[in-house]
Every structure is written in C-alpha cells, then in structure tokens.
Amino acid sequence: MKNRIRELRKEARLSQEELALAVGTTRQTITSLEVGKYTASLKLAYKIAKYFNLTIEEVFDFEDMEEM
Image 1 (cartoon, rainbow, N blue to C red):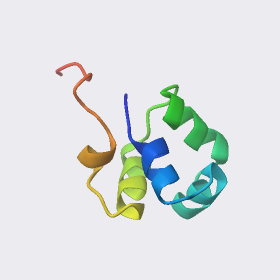
Image 2: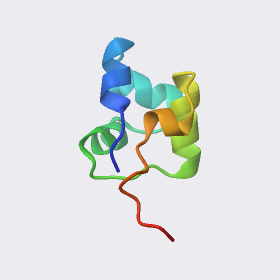
Image 3: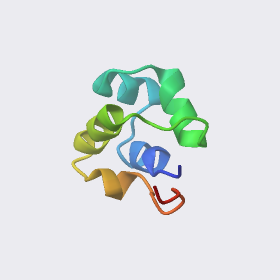
C-alpha cells in the first residue's frame, strides 16, 4: 500500500526514530512502511495520521486495494 509517510516525515524534519517514538512503534516498522514492505494496522495508521493532523486517507492510498 502506498503512503506519504516519508514525505510527511521529511516535511516535519523528523527522523524515522523520532516518528516511531511518537506513534509507539519501532524505526524498523517506519522504514518498512515507507518502502511498502509492510501495511500498517488500523491502529498504527490512525496514530500516524493523527500525529500529522491528517485523515488516514490523506496518508495512505487505498486505490490499489482489492474490493472485498
């Protein structure tokens, strides 16, 4: 799933470690999210979006998701 985490983090001048600490996860998880190797849980997606004062849809791109 595509996302804007790296872009938003860079704009805020945050390291991966700083963002990870702010949302209660690890730097490795942030790295994996940024390169698309991991899909965030709903809880983590919410925390990341809330941290940047955005909606989940403004951070994560759901267009590639298959219809259920």
